[in-house]
Length: 416
Image (cartoon, rainbow, N blue to C red; front, side, top):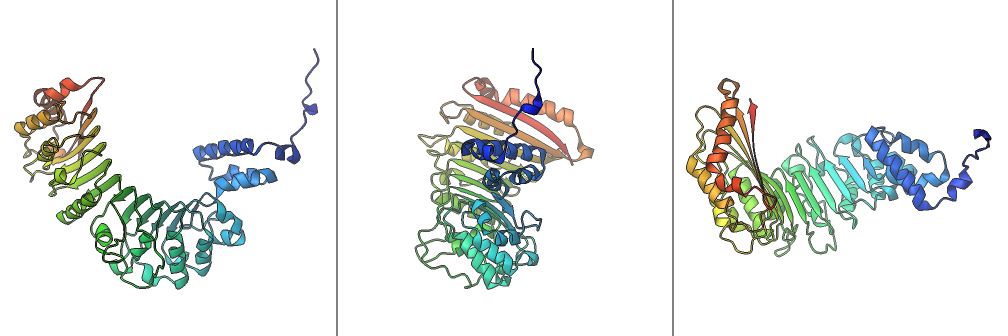
């Protein structure tokens, strides 16, 4: 048998690689990109690969520059790189930008104007530096970014920006193809610096998320482009995620529900002393598929369920409901004074445990977190109490647990 001589194996050359079909080249680079991400090599592998062969340059750049972050001035994210090689801007799909003096140069503004295919834009800022302090060049750059036809996902987090130095609300009105809107701290600037001409219909996002409803959403709901045209149209929202820490925020939440009449997913959290009310009147369960309701109560509240039992009872009167999944997440801050009223549990079991109440409901999850002080720690006793309550006060729900209906009940003890 002849021996195998590795020296006679022909090594691939640039010409042979370039003859490979482009889809094979893309598959190779895609695998490298996934492995680089797993090993957190900061795209070093892709960078090295792009230098080996001309055929690898374009597919490597597609991954290397698909997401850029102007919040830090590392060599791979510097705006100067975009200015030196404008062709790189064509690969950019995701942009992260942090407001701050060091990022607001004329070169930065020029680089932002080169980006014309951004799909996801995250604008952050934790310092007292807002729209009114921006140069005209930077203001024009932001007007350009928000008006891109490709832009579908916008996240704004401007927690540290004063109310009168935020962004003009009308900027969002120029996002004609907006799908997902996430507001973690939107501030409205009372300025006429942003003049947008030829605005089409207001954006109609399908998803809305906001942790600070007041004054975040209040600005968008109150300010209008004209007497009949709002800054943003919420009537098409399908997914809504909100948090309500006071009555003012809950009233804004109610306004959103009045506009979003075709919700399919709702994730709402209320904290004491806020309770759920008017929820059944605002929601149309004909379109609702999944509802996640979280609520925090303390020893001063008499209603363990924060008004939710009455709301569920009223919801059960609606016809043709489509609710399929219901998740309740209860956080109780308690010590030895807190009491659990048996009749509340029985009423709760009668509503959810009845198969005819929500005929399409196939999954119900109820999680209780007990946050108690260490000196009042009776973890084992409390866990036994809840297991007993499940068997004694939730018999209908427990009996429904089957392949057709999933019931998950869990209790967690957290020591403060």
